Image (tube, rainbow, N blue to C red; front, top):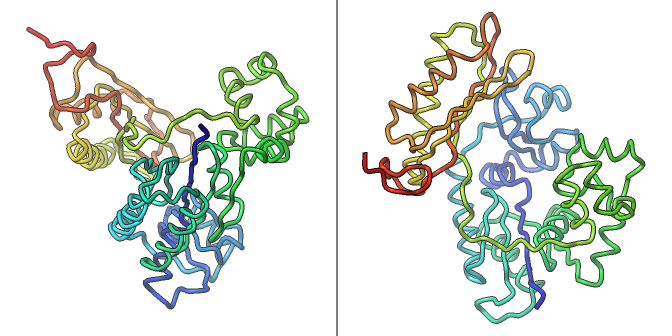
Length: 358
């Protein structure tokens, strides 16, 4: 039986909430993120700001250059989380098979919906109406038989869009799609494909598995499947957390080890709190360092047991920092993350999951 998958993506989520809560921002180019006077980064931008080429992950300073009259506001994450919780409550009226991807998007499997509506298109309409009615926000929905196609569909008619790509339309749709529109094909890979005269899904589809594997390695099989609309991934209500971490970009480059250690202490504190909140304790520690010239390195440390105390985690981070090649270099960003988890705090369990006697 074919599945009925909906991908819901909120429209300019953070910016839309700010425009809803503060009417003076409506209809104006609004940027949510850091300050353009420092090293702030754009978290999201209103559609009015996007018309000037502003997008997420862009430096706030560049955003200001593109649109000198843009309004910059700091994120209010607690508000966004509260709204996101309400939205997931709306989803749960129709199905329990919900896979959140972030605060503002999720997959829903409505093959067997709670209300016996039967039509995925009608369910998507009702979800969009409830979000608008209860939260005064808009969402875009993509509907198809698998996650990959549904996600692409949700992006086709933004904002406030609803796009259904049925089984009989998938092959023609994927063949006509530019390769840079495929989720999983980034700018670098798209440029490489263009250099090989691969511009559309049809061009990509003309290559067999062996050729794709030779050109792109393991990703070749992924490309082979997606261009044919093949995606057997299930909607996972309890998506496994792979890592927990915190990073920070500094207003002024750091050059003194003492200053870096102070920042590392704060980052480790935040990371540890998140580990405790999620009850996830990892065996692998990663330190991320970005220098003033934007070059980036990471340093990892793994052990057989999970880090059970914040102090031992901090000590390990400091060792990674002190052994990193940072002499006479300025640091603009530091990050601390933990991975390779146990899902419970059990310091006397080894890497194979067995009880340690000694």
